[in-house]
Amino acid sequence: MMIKLQAKEIVFGYDSNPVLDSVSFEIAPSKLVTIVGPNGSGKSTLIKCINKIVSPQGGSILIDRREVAKMTRMEVARYLSYVPQSSVRIFPTNVFDTILMGRRPHIGWLGSERDEEKVWDVLQLLNIERLAMNNFSELSGGQQQKVLIARALVQEAEVMLLDEPTSNLDIWHQLDVMNIIRDVVKKKEITAIMALHDLNLASYYSDRIIMMKRGKIVAVGDPHSVITEENIASVYRVQAAVRKLSDRPMIMPLRQIRGSKA
Amino acid sequence: MMSGKALFFRAKTRAEMSQSRRAGKRSAMQTAHDRFKLVRIFFVLGIAALLVFLTGLIITLGPLEISVADAYSALLARFLPDHFQSEALTSRVVWNIRFPRILGGMMAGFGLGICGCVMQAVLKNPLASPFTLGITAGAQFGISMAAVIGFSVLGGPYFIIGNAFLCALLCSFFIIGLAAIKGATSENLVLAGIAVNYFFSAISQLLKYFASDEQLRLMTNWGMGDLAAFSWANSQLLLAVFVICVPLLMSKCWDLNIMTAGDDTAKSIGVNAENTRLFIMATSSLLVAVIVCFMGIIAFVGLVAPHMARMVIGGDHRFLIPASGVLGALVLMSADAVGMNLMAPTIIPTGIMTSIVGVPFFMYLMMKGKRKEFWT
Image 1: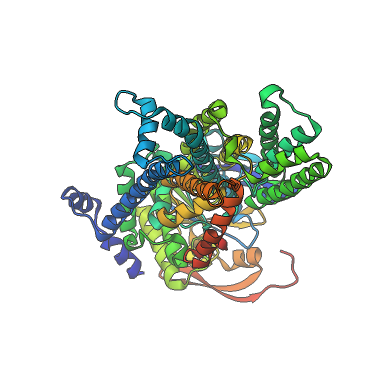
Image 2: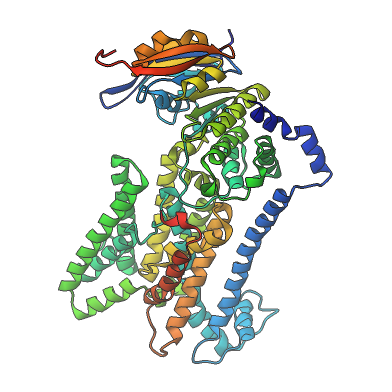
């Protein structure tokens, strides 16, 4: 198997509170990978460790066999782009300028026509060109998420990290955003790694799922092997029914499992 | 599922797009964006032209009658003596009395506008400015110390100025250091600024309490901001600091754009958020320190100029930094011109005028409230 990104025994914690406890995994190129797990299981932290937004206390991340910790931020930004969960704007910025920020790792001091052309390309690709001159803060949640994805796309990195891109979106926009991600993964041959809460979305779209609990990886594999009634019971303490739909396991949560401190 | 796919493939292919661009066809949005780019450029050029015009206009104000044309030729005669002539008296009044004060106001306004702009960006805080962060208060404390206790780190002609300079720097490094220990979030920095402001103000008040009449007058003047202190004799240091700091701040314009999106995003795009913040704060503190040294405390310009610029040209620091600077200069020069002539021959101190003229305008911008996200 070709390996695009490799995590080796990542350890991270605030004070003596471990958030990530020796996390290791490997990811092949051009795949859509989701990280799932209960609140506080370390999904978002893991995403932030991968592109050095926070520095892990132990272990290493390798991308194309190069160690991320030894790269400059600018180098990391050429390999890895990042879509935050949301972006609060204190000062007004229009959509075009927001996306143009993503060209920073490639840009000269004044910026060039080429950089602007790339922004227009991505705006058209995501079909949001009409929003170009709108104020970012005045967009709906779904539109904001698309703009943030567009910014990551103009960065032209081979791996895109996303932190819960569908949270706060209605189901139409959840599908909209997930379809965009799946399509760019295919078309631009990039790897997407995202933290996700919705197990059904994860199951439907992912090539591979990483399931975490309390900073440890519990299960890794394709949706069929990870999204099982047993795993959901032990990781989420929820009894669920898992059925196949469109050849993907879909879950219906039934009841909480109380008492047992699994 | 289909909707997403359809959406994706409805977009033109890259080949089609580049073809239509080669043919010179641009979409309505692209045309709108092109127009906005021009608006930004013309706005900066326009206010710069206004600055030149205002300079000539303000030179004409005063007891000696000087026309606008005479004002410009008196200035240009200094640089191009072959092409422009000027009467000796006019030349002396323009060059030695009126222009230095205008230039001082221009530089102070320009520097404060730029500093406010970059500080607001790195702290992601619309209330950040040299005054609100306590850096000017630090400088004032240095001045009070020299004037009342007679203590100064530097002697000779830098007796007061050197103190102001070092205390301002010390103050901003204290804020940065405190924030570095507690985590350099924008909230921590502004809270630290408020604390520093109150602390130094209290000590300055204490020193005033013990000061003699003469010392009190000096400290009060400095506290109100006084452009009369600027002259050709002491302009070199100010100019040197400007020539170094302004290009340094401008060189960070992309990083400043990105910093407004938050530290996590900035890091993910390749900007070292912490280092950029320290660099910007240190460089702009230096600029503020020399301005306070020469002109005293001028509160309101650094806060309002960036907001005025943002209203018109948006948040791109490639244009926002120069625009904030020029608008700061315009505000300060106009306010000072009014202060000079309103109750002539009594001169109202610059700092008082900027606040009297500017605060109502600032309130108006606030109440207009179109860009409500400023104040959330």
